[in-house]
Image (cartoon, rainbow, N blue to C red):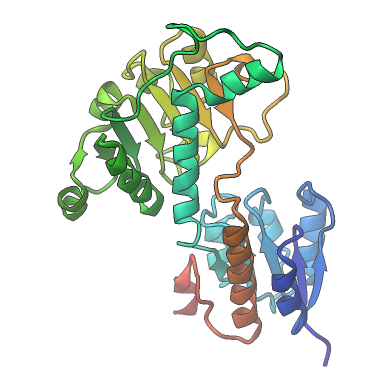
Amino acid sequence: MPKPKVFVTRKINPSAIEKLQSIADAEIWPNENPPPKEILLEKFAATQAVLTMLTDSVDHEVINRAPSNFKIISQMAVGTDNIDVTSATKRKIPIGHTPDVLTESCADFTWALITAIARRVSESHQEVRQGIWLPWGPDVLLGADLFGATLGIIGLGRIGLAVARRALGFNMKVLYFSKTRKPDLETKYNLQYRSMEELLSISDFVSLHVNLNQSTHHLINTDTIKFMKKSAYLINIARGKIIDPKALTQAIHNKQIAGAALDVFDPEPIQQNHPLLSCPNVIITPHIASASIPVRKKMAEMAVENILFALQNNPIPYCVNPIVYQ
């Protein structure tokens, strides 16, 4: 009996691939760039499972190419805003993802960005590389203190809470805004709930940890940035479209805020001539918050595990739309 066909949209950990190939005929897209839409259309029509990345646009048209015996879309990420979940659910196609495993890694990276932007680490490193090493002086590369500062977290999910826990070691005042208030966490971690406007107006550092949806698209825009202090920094490791890039560019140019540190952008990759790239008070990294070796290995294993369960006609362990099993 022939093995079921599976398409993997990028190279992943070899041990995960080996496990997948033990029960499936797995084809791995060999390029660094995502497969174009015509390839996705072709592979969805000819396979029983596809392992996707967050850079793959799995829209209504792609999903409707899947045959009647199609088993699963398995995403190697937590978020699934690149997938038309509604269309997949209507087709009774389960969508897998990889929750929990990247929480601590992403929180670590958030703090790497906070520390780097506050103390001008990237800027000073570039100066040294360019042969600029000014003598020690009272005003050379002055930055902001973290200890005792106020951190505002927008979105107190797993990653937002992990960021908040780390702030306790810096003796920071931690504010949060979330869809639902969480009194138990307020008590346990000494967090303070604020409206988004209050949070933006008080915080020295604003860190974004919300999911991307209609209500959070361009959540940070010309109007909301106006609430921020001129000495404040904006940090985003969530999704690029949560920030209006034109509004941020204008705010940086007009010195409305002190700086920004971004691991995500809209669109990705950022255009090489984008004005933010020439701003010394902006750090932009290429969507690598979860890029630790153990985390990416575990994510690959979880994505493959979802596929193995689906191919054996079992409910998948990490499911975005469990209603498909009802």
